[in-house]
Image (cartoon, rainbow, N blue to C red; front, side, top):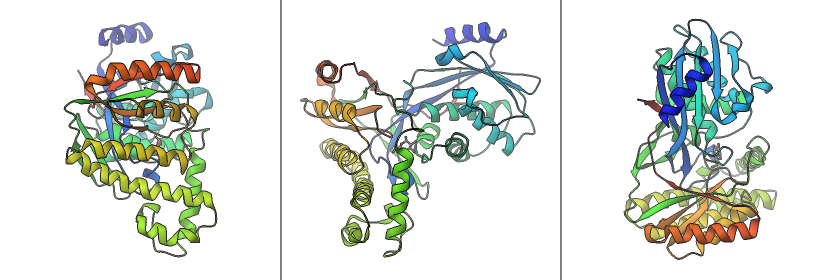
Length: 387
Ligand code: GLA
């Protein structure tokens, strides 16, 4: 594949590329819709992701070309005009990152050409956007000879989403994509950004990624609506208990104070956040203790909570998760990412994998009317230069 990318670069830009970078996608094992509520998440980087080939230019022009959007041709802009432009479409993600890094340190900034190719299904909830943001960040780090802390790049990625694109997402995706480590998951406290790296030891099991192929666009999904419901609930609870985030509430606090919330919907949302935060901590312990049965149960409970209380699953995700949960050899399953379509994950015993994919694939297509895609996740490193 690398050879094809090198050839494509020459075809598109009529020069050879100088450097090659890769940024992964991510799955979240558990801890969903928790990052923007100040609690714990448990994601890992996967070996699917985005490749970028670059060549520095001697002028101030940036030219970007994505093989995934080849019909859109080359997107071209100047370092002197790094503003969001509707017609730049996908290129606004790298453009946002370029703009913020330029503000950070432009002393050695030059224009460049970059060819991009991603093998993460896009819009599937595996963070193709965080992947392209961090890909751009590590490429620029090299080309402009700047050395910000990795965590600053992660934060700038979130700023691209929030301020440049306009999606109120949390820090989880960029964190996993930027800080991931091969064969490890990251338990991240989204309030303090303290984290621990937990070995993902699955001696006889695999993580199966199931793409419902129901597309999901964060910008027009109910994502921002869930965020504001949580803010509303937080403001109401702060009148009766001293908390900074919803995740500061323990399950017992929730029982005690839920009566002060003005609407049932808010109670449901908070119940999800509080119980999911606890499940995430429990899941980390179960994984460390090698207790995959408990881990799997927590995954199942997480899905149920996202379905009934947080209401972000939908027919396609519920169908695929229920089908897979009913298969022998499946230890647990849940949606992953924002929801409203996109992907689910399942922990499956090696011996059962082929049968599970076959039977779930067939039953899903029968029920939904189109096919799902299946991938085995291998857990890789965060964004970096590759040779
Ligand atoms: C999206 C967002 C993340 C996180 C998840 C839900 O992936 O980008 O910040 O909120 O949804 O857990």
